[in-house]
Image (tube, rainbow, N blue to C red; front, side, top):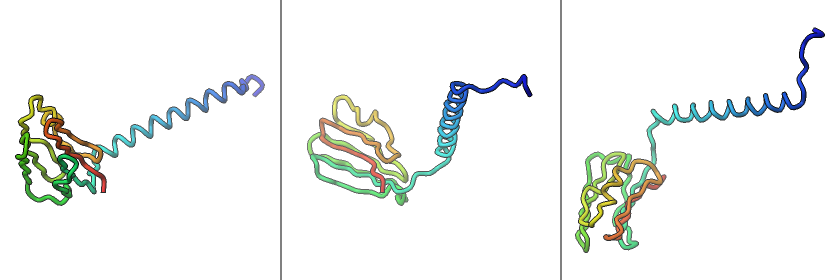
Length: 124
């Protein structure tokens, strides 16, 4: 027992920091694993144009696709399906709204600036 090395204060501090880092990394890994198979509930899609709300849809209860064709000014077509919504077509020059792709999570949004149309998903 006399040959056993004693820990210094600095050694104990380094071991404690290492342990905290390992716990944090394990937590991130486990959270990522849990989120992969988890289905999101409570998503409401909101379509608005010129600041006016055109439609509000519960994405979790949609049974069939719903299409919205907005024809005033620059025309856009939006499709909402169970769990997702997206700009399908747009007559705007860059089509950034279409290239944004499918929105599925609360906080996702796509904007067509030329037509002043916003599609976003809110958390219920």
